[in-house]
Length: 302
Image (cartoon, rainbow, N blue to C red; front, top):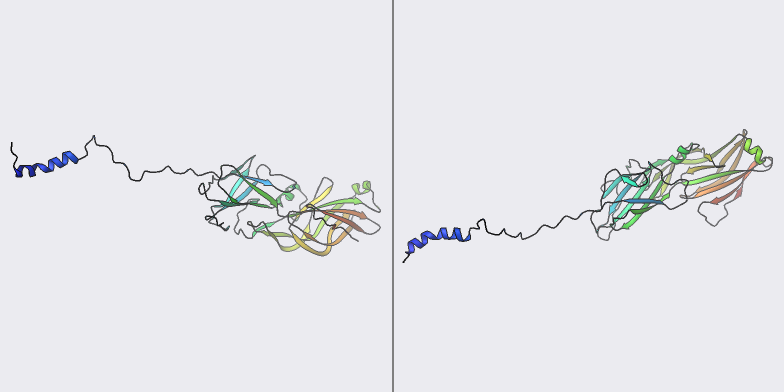
């Protein structure tokens, strides 16, 4: 049978449609760029630890603030007031540390610096965060409220493990023990009406959260220490105090003054053993630093 040229041309569109139309039995086309699963980000968990001797560990209800600053390749970032990977996230302690909102690493490769401080506050300036110790620390709650701590962990790689952040006290501590000298006995001193003051110290400070450095501010005043376990103690802003009546011990209305210049150092506890003597109308002092400095800082006060 012969098919005319005109008939063949007329039938050609139908042939194309049935031969190449991709009917219901045709396989689905394969995507040229298959979608890869989204990487699951790791949760950031922390475990602040005390690195120096302390009166108290962290207690239930304590709150810290955390900043996380990402690296750019091998270059560390700079802690800023805002715009860090994590800005002042509050963690609350209840056996473990729980953030107000879950936070994650940027990805599985980007390193980060962690900056932590205690107690939590509404920080406006990470380079000069204001803080004050209490002038009256005669109660345990006031003494605790005067504690300021800071710590950091640098160049940390992403991990599922909690990040251990060593935390240091940034204030200085003074402890004062009284001993009976000439004209006193241990019994008479125990029965006496005794009051202790630390004079000429500044109670205001600013903290650089990145470095942990603290700077004294404000006007000098008098601090009343806490009496506990047969001694007196107070938290003092690190500073150098000019020579004067640094410590006043009042016994039954009579003042005994320790005249001395002294430098209170961050994270150190300075022990003053004060021997009261009626005959010399003064006190003797022997000072041993909390972190031993290998020096005899003792002296005589009259």
